[in-house]
Structure formats: structure tokens, C-alpha cells
Image (cartoon, rainbow, N blue to C red; front, side):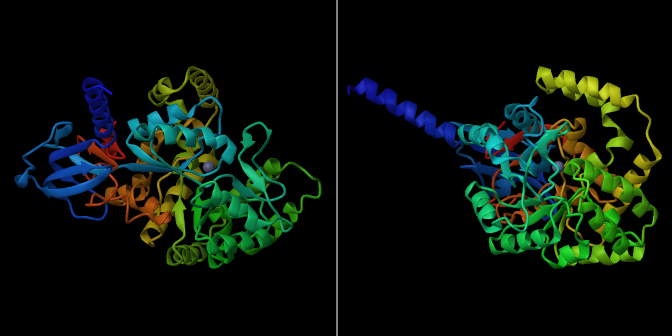
Length: 467
Ligand SMILES: [Zn+2]
């Protein structure tokens, strides 16, 4: 090799090295996270994807090397990257993973938790992240919804894509969990049509493998029994309505009868039928004492709650009916834009029902009580369900959690530290501390003054890379 070619190769190699490990310094910025007190005039140095050092801005690092980006943070606020902890990347075919990832990052969401997808269908997203690590959020996933024999999401009825697997007492659950672990899942998601026996066995096997099980509480089990058996999390505060009813035990007996499914109807229809016959009756017969006892149990047993208020208030807040909200659809692929626009306009013609308003108030009230009692709340949306545009919808969720009664700092915690705690990675991510992963947002305004200020993003840094 002659000398010229050698130096060309060498400089190319160095360029690649530098590009792969960019280093960034943010000077004179205010640091805000949900654990530390507010720190003013700080310099944060990011190297190799982690927060390398945090110093008082007076000790500004002088010898900035080449290929080193320096950002003036004067008057700005640095917060940890946000999470949307309830996402379904494979729910509809019209939105591709590149769009999802772009919209999440654009909105400051640097970590997502996929709460239900067949691994084979999720694989293209996983491959894309592997080949484009610098342009993608971190993705944690449960794999398929683990449902019972009459599973709900089996891809047979409209609105119910294939997201699940069905197991029962005859299944080798050990093997199922082992397979999912081999495919990289870091938690499990249970679903509503599981039998009590299968669910209890699943909880045991999950525990043995250090996996938390979150999801929908099976309709066949009493919530308090599920908590005692080691359930790890709940989505949509679902089935709290049934558990908090004055006659919860009788409702459970009736559900079990229906679940025997003598007419052999589809799981999706049976599930809907059970909820329509019990939900509003149960809310109407709300037993505050019983509910408080359950909530205290949830807090004591560290059962994480992802209320997804954006989806619980789908019928009452009607984001889709707001032209300003629909402007977000312009960032979706053309096919999705058309389907969403048309679907939104059609739905907007329908009236808000009394039940929509009841469920809205019940959901917000319950989140408030849970928060006050110390239940760990996680921010998540259920995007793309309900015309909830990826990324933008997380900020709606944060506003709703605040409206429910959480402080701005508590809301920030729900979208940073708490999801990390759910996955036992809070020592790596979620606050601005030396050694933590460098997923960070620079905001133009203080998020503790208004949680809406998380929408006023100056810059997003994901995996140490400026986006
Ligand atoms: Zn979901």
C-alpha cells in the first residue's frame, strides 16, 4: 500500500471512529430531573453515549478538541429523555417503524416500551434499530400479549390484529417464557382471557426468570389475589373498575360464567360483552373503602400502573375531533394520513356520551388517589390506537397526568425514572448524573413551571448523539 492510500484509509478510519463516538459539551445550563434538586449553571460533558462529567460552569473545560460539539445552554433546561411506555409498533400496517422512531425522537421520546407484538412482526423494527443505532430510540418489548384459549387479538376480526398467543393449562409455559427470553423480551404482558390457573402459573415462571408481568388483569381472577401472587404492573387502570365495585365478588362469579363461553363466540366479542355489562355498573357502585384498600396493596407490592389516560379519555377528550391535533397527521405516511383523517372526521360526528364523561372523571380521580397513596405511575399512551399520533400523544398524556393531580415533577418522574425502575435499569437511565446514559432534552422553558414546556424542545440527544 503506498503512503497516500494508507493516510487516506487512516483518516477515513479516524472519521468513522469520531462519528461513532461524538462528544458533546452543553455549557451553562439548568439541570432538572425527578431525583436531584434543580442545579443551575452546569456544564455537562457527554462522551461515548454517557454523561461523562457534570461541573459548575465556572470550570468550563478549556481544551475542546476538534470534532467536539459545544452547545450554549444559557437560559435553557436539560431534562432526561422521555419514555412512552405503552406503544404498539405493529398494530397497524400504515405506519412504518422509521416514521415511529422519527416522531418519537422529534418529540423527545428516547425510550419506548412495546406492550404487545408478535416477535416476527417486530423483527424489522429491531433490525432497523440495530443498523441505525444513532437515529432510533431505545426499544424494550414484551413480545406477544399472553392470552388464554379464547384470545382477543388473533388477527381474525376487524380492529383486532394478531398481537397475541393463547396459552392454557395444557401449555408448556416454561418453554413459552424461555423462547421469549431468547428473543430479547425484558418483561411480559398478560391479557384478559387467561384462566386463573394459567395466569398464576405464568406469574410464578416469570418470577423465576426475573421478569415483571404487566398487562390487563385476567377477567377470571380477583385483583387482590393477583397482587398477592406477584403481578408486576397494570395497563389502563383496567379492571380496577370491577375490583372496586361494592359487589366485586358477585361480578367475578358472573364473569367466570360468561368466560366458560358456552356459545363459543369470538374472544374479542366476549371480552367486549363482559366489559359492557360490568364496567359502568361497577363504577356506579364504587366502594371507596374497598378501592383504597386495593390501592394501598398496589403501592405496598410495587405494582406499576400505566394509566394511559389518553386512551381512557378517547371518547371524552376527542383529540381526533380537534383540527389542531389533526395537523400532526401530516407527519404520517400518506396512506395513514388519509385513513386517520377520514376516520377522525367520521368519529367526530358522534356525540360524547354520558359514559364517556363518567369514565374520564373516574380514570383521572383514580390516578390521583393512586399517586397520593404512592403507587408507581408510568406515562404511556397506546399509540397508534385512538388516532394518537406517535410522539405527540405522550405530551398529551403528561398533561392529563398533571390534570389528574400529579405535580409537574411527579409527571416528569412517570416518564423518566419510573419506567426505568419497572425494567430494573434505573441505575443506568432516567436522571442527569455522571455515568448515566446520555438521553437528554434541551428545553427552552422550565418544565417544573408547566409540564407543557416539555413540548418546547430546543434539541434532542439520544444515545449521546444530537438528533
Ligand atoms: Zn395497549
